[in-house]
Amino acid sequence: MKICNQVLNIWHPTPENKVIINLPATVSMSMPHVYASQIEYMSDHLNYRDNVILSLHPHNDRGTGVADAELGMLAGAQRVEGTLFGNGERTGNVDIVTLALNMFSHGVNPKLNLENIPDILSKYEKLTRMKVHERHPYGGELVFTAFSGSHQDAIAKGMKWREERERQYWTVPYLLIDPKDIGRRYEGDIIRINSQSGKGGIGYVLMQNYGLDLPMEMRESFGYTVKNVSDRLHKELMPNEIYDIFLNEYVNINTPVEFINYRFTQNNNYETSVSIRIDNEVHEFIGVGNGRLDAISNVLQTTLGINYNDLVYKEHALEIGSGANAVSYVGFTALDGAIYWGCGIDADIMTSSVKALFSAVNNMISGVKPKIEKEYSVSKK
Image (tube, rainbow, N blue to C red; front, side):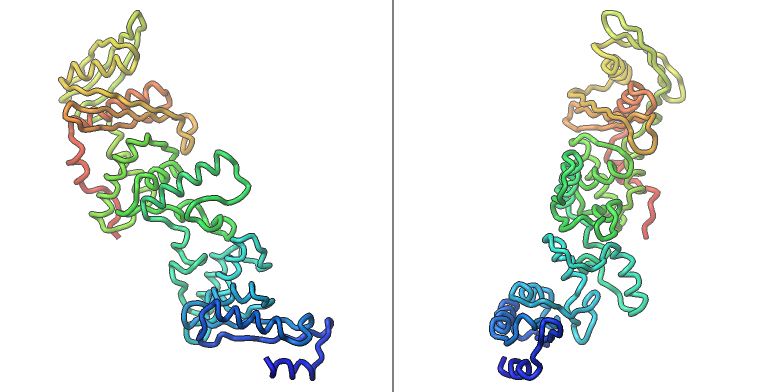
């Protein structure tokens, strides 16, 4: 302090000709709050304080460079010397990218153009020949990615809640800032699937990429299937691979019972004529019920000698891929307590529900466990 003030007394800094006093944390000998106290003391006791720019130069020897800088600024510093992604001697200098975006996350404009982090990162790695770690704050490939099931579920719910309410401010759990603000994508960045993923994240991937909004109970069933495949292949699954698994598991109107067509005639009960192929032979059956789907369900149970109850049904328009299609989901409980699901996709909403019912019945007849163990046509890289 005495040396700095003696120099200032000689220089006589003015508002037009200010002086920079640089205070480094060269090897981070002090804890961040102690360093901040030192900065505050200097700020309070420097001569010509209004004409001095108090500057920080934190290194990162103890991994506290960002904390040193943030507390130092709160203590009165006005300037920080740092580097892109923490480059510098030994363990590097404070990472300006992390520091600036931390400020941004708290509503403080750092006045740096960081709106395209992927481009900045690409140039940095090309020019320095140094690799930014995939979990480096803000810049790393995985910093906005959730594999944990509980995190995925919270993010998916937060994104949906935000879309429904058109929130002005960013309020999504586990995501510090909106990835789009720094040039990152939602698709493929936020939620990625491996054997640790949960039903919420897997359902989110299908919804975001393919418009499939699975019933909650079906998400749980499909979640176990996807995690089993990921665990067996020892790899992360891409959205197209998850979609292929879904089609293989739940969209099946051909084996062992093939759905051909149906006709309805509404009297007091819903009478239906349905054509199906069993063992390469086409048969036509008549059934009745208290609704169209119930009538076909009664035909299948009577014809095939199967029994189930607690039928669950959900339908919606398929918003991604084809606006003309509808998707239906059907689930039911067998007498032994096992739950089976099926999905149907068709331009006609009633036909999609019939296909979903056939898919669920075929899953019941074939048995789900053997299907889970089969090899899927996905890359093992």
